[in-house]
Length: 344
Image (cartoon, rainbow, N blue to C red; front, side, top):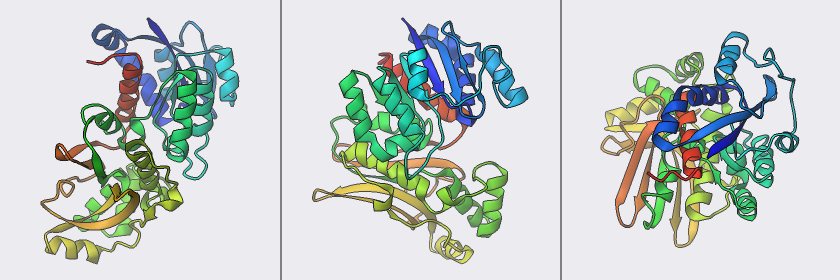
């Protein structure tokens, strides 16, 4: 069976998905039996391209590399095209959402996912917005339409967490999941351990593309908080909004704090977590000085890690990349394979 795919968003992650699909087409078909054609790509600023027979991914890559858009391609038109309108024009089996995140409204991701699921398409997203603000509502639409929504890349990029809990950890009761889910802040804290002050560490993170020009979402803990909301909903069935998360960022962490922790055999990390105790679900994001023996202490640079406390296996820790176009696209592809029915 050939799967029709639509891609919303054509920025860093959307472009990375296009590239990975183009690179891996033969491998995905040979190993997983996953045949596909990308029937549309829709971007607010980079153009909209629809082709029922499948867009030329190599041509899309070249246009993005050369022009930063797809508007120069034959048949391309300027956006935006409302998601529901585009899905009526070109129905697909799997809609991939790579749109930006808004921590308050969940848009545009939430609207894209609602339209995709309502059209009868399965939906895969790497955006934290929609699933972070109303995962239960999106799951309800999916159930009603008999389709699936998957969001592996929304928490730890392509590093498996959601699928780990849903699959190999099935049967375990989880009481806590906490870790480092924001690579920008972890990079800054790592540089501060190496002797940089906060301002210079942030400047370096911005130069490398880890931090935005306005880094508030990362350094004030909003990015980590919305990921905690996703974990609370998926792991504990608890609807939590970002304002409900006990949130403290790293802007108050000084070089002296970092040095003092190191002298005591500890490292300061921005820890994001969710735990259930006596029926109550607590969600938090906070800098914490952890012992060097702690499994999260050795996580440095822009890497992410989560420690999951279970009844049957004790603490299980997963570590891996927490950012990057190819890494995030890998999580999207893994979700698509799961939707397509590949089970190993």
